[in-house]
Each structure stands twice: as C-alpha cells, then as structure tokens.
Length: 209
Image 1 (cartoon, rainbow, N blue to C red):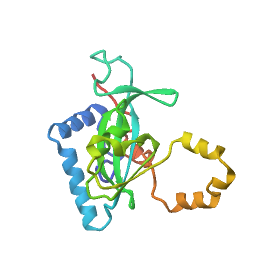
Image 2 (image 1 turned 90 degrees about the horizontal axis):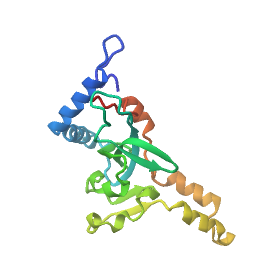
Image 3 (image 1 turned 90 degrees about the vertical axis):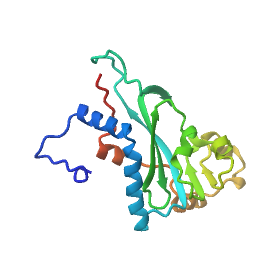
C-alpha cells in the first residue's frame, strides 16, 4: 500500500491535517467513486472480478470523542452507536465485495449509527445473482428499494434460530459433517477489514477542529 501511495520511510509522511484536506478534496470533486470505477474496470478486464455474487458487510471506524480541539466540538460527521454491550464513536464503512475473488467493488461511508441493512442498495452493482450477508441484514429482501431486484438473498440466521435448533430433537439437527461442509464450500458471509484498515491507516479517524 505504501508503494501504491508512493510513500517511503526515507521521506516525510503527510500528517493528519494534510490527509484530511486531501480527503475533503476527493469528496468535493467526487473523485473517489471515479477512481474505484477505473480500478474495477481493470480488474474486470483481467477476469479477476466475476460479478456473479456480492458479499456485503460493514465495520466501525473509531474516531476521537473528545472535544479538546480548536472548535471545542466533535466531528459532526461522526456519531455514537452501541454494538453488543459496548458504545463506539465514529463512522461506519459499508463494503460490497465480489463473492468469488473478495475484491471490493463498492465502498460507502456513513455515521456509525446508520443501520447496515439500509445501505445495501449502495453496495450492489446490479449484475449479481446472489447477495450474501450476516444476520445483521435480516429482512433486507423486504425493503422497498429491493422490491424488483432479482437476486437470491443468502442471509445468515440469527443466534436465536440456532438456539431453537439446538433444543429440537437430535434427529432433526444437521450433522457436524454437513455443517462443516457448508462452511467450507459456501461463500464467505463476511469481509475481513483488519488488513485493509491497517494498510490504509483508517482504523481510527482524526478530526482536526
């Protein structure tokens, strides 16, 4: 990633304000979607993006919640949300990726409190015949924006459903072998963000007031 951005350890690295100004420049001229479209075009020409299925997922990118800055306030683009029993402050990156290659074809950013299921339409290219997601996207196929979308929705079951299965008769439970086979051969239901976040240095957002 450093080579792609032409950053070296022997030269000064841009500080956070410079990076933020560059981000705002991309947003102002709407260049980020155009850059991603060009990259995806090259990948598709090389046959690296099959475009038959899309995996959707989201991750929270933390931001400082402190108001100790020049303007004395938090970044207005960030928001607080609760995941499990823990609160987070920041933004959320919504990702659409090719189910076969894992290559990302859509990225959409929102405040952290925006529900994942509401952003699926922003992550599909329209040519897929199947969409894969975790249980957080339950009910996505019933939303109005997907009313005429002809895809197979592969949404993971919630834990409560698995609990009911565990309480059912043993004869009705899927065998451990069949469950393992589904996991081994089935498409991934989530996207790993740790590597990309570390490479892009986006595991945390900085707000310079």
